[in-house]
Length: 135
Image: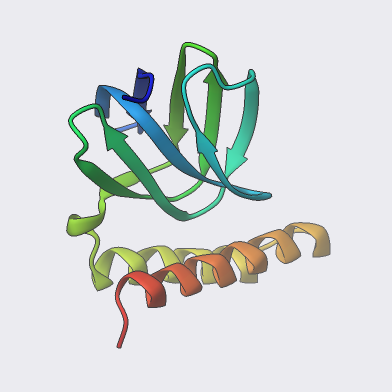
C-alpha cells in the first residue's frame, strides 16, 4: 500500500477537501506534477486545470481549479486555489462567465505584458472548457 499524506484544497469560498491521500496530480504552471508522500518541499503556481486526488480508499476525485498555489511538504500538500469546484459541478455557464471576465480584463489591460499574460490565461481556460465540456 502506498504511503499516505495530508491534503487540503482550499478556495476563498470554502475548504473543499481535507483528507488523507496517496496521490495528487497538480496542474502546475510549468506542467502537471504528481505529488506523493515524502515529496521534496516545493511551492508552485497552478494554472486552470483539473486537480486529481487519489484517496487512501482508492477513490479518485477530480476538481476544476482556476489558478492559485500549491505548497508541498514531505508530510502533506495544500492547494490554495483562486477558485475551485468538483469536476461534476463544472458547467458551461461557469466557464462562460470566467471567459467573458477575462476578455474584459484583456481590453482594459494597462500594459502589453499584462495583456499577454491575460491572453495566455484565456487560451488555457478555453482549452480547459473544451476538454472538460466537449461539443
